[in-house]
Amino acid sequence: MTSPQPIVIPPPSLDDVLYEKRDGFAVITLNRPVVLNAINWSILRRLEVAFDQAEGDDSVRVVILTGAGRAFSAGGDIQSTPPEDGLPVPSGFDLNLRIWRMAKPVIAAVRGYAVGQGHELAGICDFTIASEDAVFGELQIRHGFGPPVLITPYLVGPKQAKELLLLGERLNAQEALRLGLVNRVVPGDELMAASEAMARKLITLPQATVRANKLLVNHVHELAGFNEALRYRDDPVLGPTSALRGDDTDPHLKVLREQGWEAFRKSRDANYRGE
Image: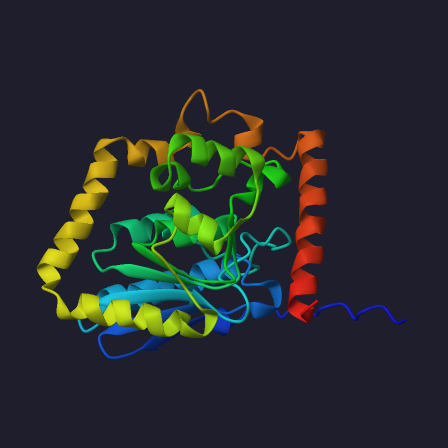
């Protein structure tokens, strides 16, 4: 029996994020399906451009964010290297806040993996619609990291948040629905139709009120300390903690990350081959 051929990872491309304008809404697609849309500097740059385009277009009233292929996003690309051009790259944290602060509603259409940073990206969106095969999870603890964007405690209760963040387990779509991580679960072949139907309903409603109500809901969380919680790395007590900072000088954490990446790589490769 021959061993499977290694997957060739495509180089960064302008097509790592796709933008499509439709009647009243835009579809933004993470487009690195070979690595289950793992987030690297290229995706971060292209996402910033795509959201700039959507936000600056008055005819776009709603945004749908989704992933190409079998996954929404399998999280941060641990093997990603910095760009060689030296140009700035927005952080995942900044892009998550961009969605939070954007006046227009953003719908996450999730199939397959939405784990790690992918879990948080789906969570920060105003609505999340999941296909029946969707898988969620805050897996960073397997790599020795704290959560880059501390959105989970605001989506679920404290005990559920601790279960997600401390155990790093995966959740299926129905479990995510039960916990409040998603709004709806639909069959896989109905995911985009359901997301587009929600977008079209939002488009027909009074836009000033839609945007005001998003602002009001966000304001409630901000009054409860949302902004301060997200910036926990700036806290003089929490910030210096190596496990939260991702300190590569800690040999134990380095081993954990290497083991975590290898486990993710095997899972990714098997998923891509349809095993």
